[in-house]
Image (tube, rainbow, N blue to C red; front, side):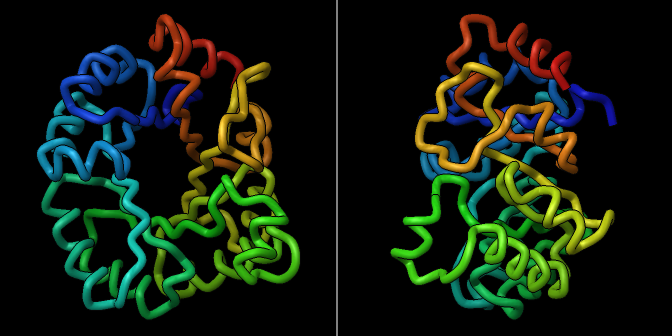
Length: 227
């Protein structure tokens, strides 16, 4: 995989009219485009199809977390929209992850989100997760892969431990990536693109550092060069 191919650019915009020019600018310089909750809730499946028309696979980041029957149906609908990857929460349990895999079918890779990158140790204690973030991430990673997930989402700080726990097969997609000197925003567990890839990330998700850049295409090329 090329350095540029490891970058997933997040289309974090409230409307497709805002996302389209950004997507067209960065698509030639990245390997994937992400449609998240904000854009999907506003525009629905047409946003996924429009993003796919820009020539890159679409990562539909909905983080589904519901009873297995509901998640299976949602995953089936996501597959029909043209998404190549779809996220569910590993905390929904093995049965829910298996249902997502069934619903998505062979054409969509299910990625299980372990622990959100916005959560630090204090936040984890508040929601009742005992122990370190790394321990929780590894536990959820093993559960999800055992239930058939084709990949995992974890912070850069847990990539090496997750890779050691689940082996080389699952795709590791890593948000919370910030180029050197960039603001953390609401992310608690972060690393630079190069650090994430060295630790074992297959794909890094980059949002605000690209979206807010004066020249997003140049920013994407710079990140790839840094990898």
